[in-house]
Amino acid sequence: MLVDILFRNADVIDGTGAPRRNADVAVRDDRIVAVGDLGAWRGGVEQDCTGLVLAPGFIDPHVHHDEVVLTDPDMACMTSQGVTSIINGNCGFSIAPLTAAPPFPAPLDIILSAEVPRFARFAEYRARLDAQPPAVNTACLIGHGTLRINTMAELGRPADATETAAMRAALDAALAEGGIGLSTGPFYPPARAAPTEELIAMAEVAQAHGKLYVTHMRDEGDRVRESLDETFLIGRKAGCGVHVSHHKCAGLANHGLSEITLAMIDAARARQDVGLDTTPWIASSTMLNSGRHRQATRVLVADSVPYPELAGRDLADIAAEWGLDIDSALERLLPATGIFFVMDEGDVRRILTYPHTMVCSDGIARGKHPHPRVWGTFPRVLGHYVREVGLFSLEEAVHRMTGLPAERFGLTARGRLAPGHYADLVLFDAASIAEGATYDAPITPARGIRGTWVNGRAVWRDAAPTGARPGRTLDQNTGTIAP
Ligand code: ZN
Ligand code: CU
Image (cartoon, rainbow, N blue to C red):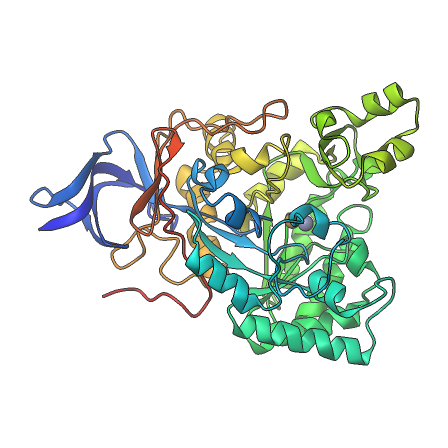
C-alpha cells in the first residue's frame, strides 16, 4: 500500500485521553487512513518518529487572530506550537460582519488595523479566507460587541427593540453563513451597558442554530460569582450551551476564589450545558484602559500605538519617568494593550486541572511585545505543567487540547488521531517540549516541536514555516468521518 505520508514508530496519543501506544500512521491526501503496524506500507514521505509523540494537532478555542490570518497567513505563532485549528471572534469582537466605519472603539481597534478590507457580511470574510487560506484551519464566532458597533449610534445604553431586532437578524445571517457561535464581552465598554435581557435575546439566536454562547464575562474579579450566575441564567433562558472564556479570578482580593467558582460551574453543569477554557499564565492581557491595572501587582506595556518603542516596559517605570500618575501615563499610551499580573498560581493550577477545562492562548498577536501566551501556551502546559509539575498526564493534556474542544465546538473529524479523521497532526518530543516565549522575549518559538501538519500538509518543520497554507474554514456543518 502506497500513501502520501507514513509516520513510522510513533508514540501515538489519539486525543481521547486513552494511553499512548506505539504505532505507524498513514496519511493519504488530507486524511488519516490507517493506524497500526504498517510495516508493509510505503509512504511518498516517510517520517521516522522513534521516541516522539504523534498527536492530533492542537485546537485553540480562543484567539483574536481574525485579521492576522489574512495579514500573516503562515501563522507561525500557532503552527510552531503544534496548533492546527483556531477559533476567532472571541470576547464579543469579530472581524465580520462589520458595517461601521473606523475609528473603532477599543478593543476592536486592537484586533483590527486600518489597512485591511472590511467585510459587511460574514460570508465575504469566509470567501476571502477560502481564496487566500492561512496555514491553519479557522472557525469564527460572531461578536455581539461588533454587532452593537454596527447598529447603535450610542453604545452607553441598552439596545432598544428596533436595535435588538437588527442585531438578531445580523447574527442569524452570520450564523447561517458559517459563524460557529455567538461571543459576548459585557466586560468591555462597547457592551458594558447591555443588560442581561439583551444578551439573552442574542443567545436565543445562537440556540436556534444549535450553537454556543461564548463569553468574556462582565466581571472576572470582585464580581466573578455574580457574572457566572448571569452566564448560567442566559444559557437557561435561551436554552443554549454556554462557554466561559479564559476563566480566571483576577485581583489579590480574589485569589483562591476558584475553589468556589469551579464548584459553581460543577453545580450548574448538573442542570445545563457549561464549558470553559483557560490560559496557563498568572498574567492576563487586554487593552490598557480596562481598569484592570488596579487589580494587578505589576503591569507591562505590550503595545502602544503612539509609543511603540515603550513595548515591554513596566507601566510604573514609564509613569515615573514622565512624572505622571499611573492613570495619566496610561491615557497617554492609548490605544494600547498591557500585560497584567492579576492571577494566583494556585487558581491557575486548580482551573487547569478541572476536568472540563480546555487550554487556550487568548492570543493577540499585535505589536513587538505581546504576551508570551501568543507563542508559548500549548508547550507550556505540556512541558511545565505536565512534565515538571505533574498536574495531569500527557494524554489528559492532549485531550484538553484536541478531542475536548473539537467535540465542544462541533469540529467534525478533527481533534482525534484515528482513521477517517483529517490529518491535522503534531510531532513532538515529550522530554524536551517547552515554551520558548518569556515575558522578556515573547516572540520565540517553542522547543521540542518537530513538525506540524494541517490537512495532510506540513506547515511547520525544521523550526520554520514551510510556506504551505492548507487551512480551511470550519463550521459545524462541514467535515464527515470518511469511511
Ligand atoms: Zn476576553
Ligand atoms: Cu479574548
